[in-house]
Image 1 (cartoon, rainbow, N blue to C red):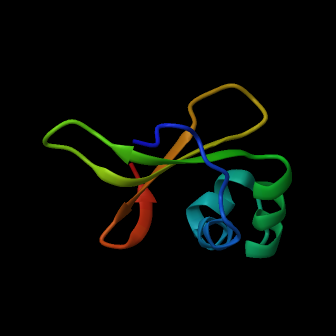
Image 2 (cartoon, one colour; image 1 turned 135 degrees about the vertical axis):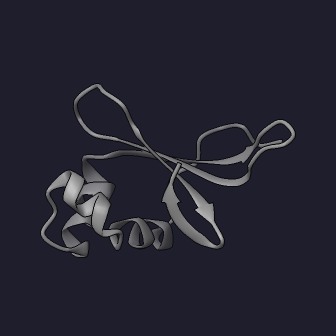
Length: 84
C-alpha cells in the first residue's frame, strides 16, 4: 500500500489548472497561469487513496495556498476530477 504523498504529474497539473472553479479560487486568469501557480506556489500532493469499506479507492488530491486554512480536496468521479 502506498500511503505517501506523491508529486503531481504534468498531466495532473494541466487537468487541475483546467478546472474553472480552481482558477477562480486562486485568481488565475487562465489555465497557463494556474499551471504556474501549481508548480511554484500552491502546496499540492496526490495520494493513491484506499479507504475502509464502503469507501473510495483512487486518486485523492490536496491543494493548499500559502495561508493556513481549509485545503481543497479533489477526487475522481466517473473519470473526472471533482471536489470531495
